[in-house]
Structures are given as structure tokens and as C-alpha cells.
Length: 75
Image 1 (cartoon, rainbow, N blue to C red):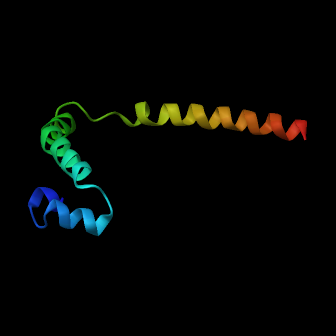
Image 2 (image 1 turned 135 degrees about the horizontal axis):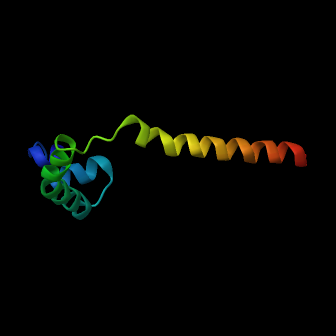
């Protein structure tokens, strides 16, 4: 955010965080170019229902429980 706001130069940020200035410049460019898309998705139908978010998680929990039970039997 400091790079976008122009609070400090890329050289100052690089020295403070131990990251090459080119990397910071690349991240800044990505954020500036991609920010409108992020906000557009969030406001127009980009919100997923709770079920679509939780269903894969419950499937993973079930799979892991089965693996755990199988491993308990093998030991």
C-alpha cells in the first residue's frame, strides 16, 4: 500500500522489507491493474452461497475421518 500511496520510494520499501524493488513494482502494477476486477466480482453476483462454500469442506472432513478410522484399525 505504501508503494501505491507513494509514501516511500521503491528503494526505501525494498530496504525496509528485504524485497527487490522490481518485485515491489510488479506487485504494485498487478494491484493497480487488477483492483477494479476484484471489486466488480464482489459487488455483482460474486458472492457465493454458504452451501457452495461449505459443501467441499464437509466432503473433505468426511474423507479425512474415513482415513483416520482406517489408520486406527491398521495400528
